[in-house]
Image (cartoon, rainbow, N blue to C red; front, top):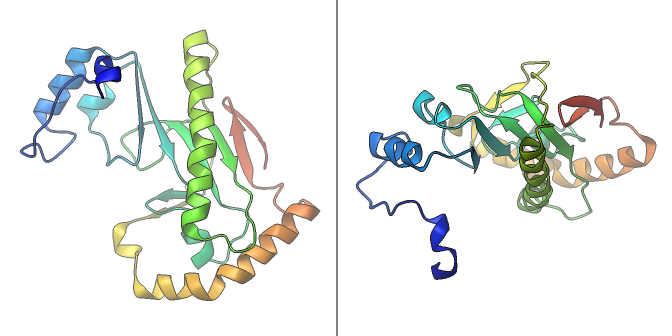
Length: 200
């Protein structure tokens, strides 16, 4: 970490239990960030959302269709090929509901698991986040309000029944998605490029 000491704005001990604690809010505000970029965080409170002109989230799921937790898992459970992906959006008080800057579907291969697809999404999302940061710096960033409510998943949805459906559906769904990519079956799943909706 010595090579990147300028990136450390504070050291936090175990007494701070929430990113939304007043101490954390003070640390963030005192840093006067131009942009806050997060991934895998809990919901941010209004005080943090108001601490920078731009607050972005990399969501490992395809918003607005799948929001909340473990969202590249649920297409397996629901037998819904084509909905694996990643989204970079402006953060809002809702769950993965902010205006979308970029989103991208990820391609699957035989044998892929939820974890493998999530890793692909993180790699793709990192590129999308870099693009979003560059467009903000250039003053060309645009974002699109989410056009449908979609589905939101919570920790309580993570059940043995869902896990059973995942294992039962995984191979067949991968096969259907691979076949569907070849025929353009998922072109109706909309994705976003710099705030503009395009076919998936």
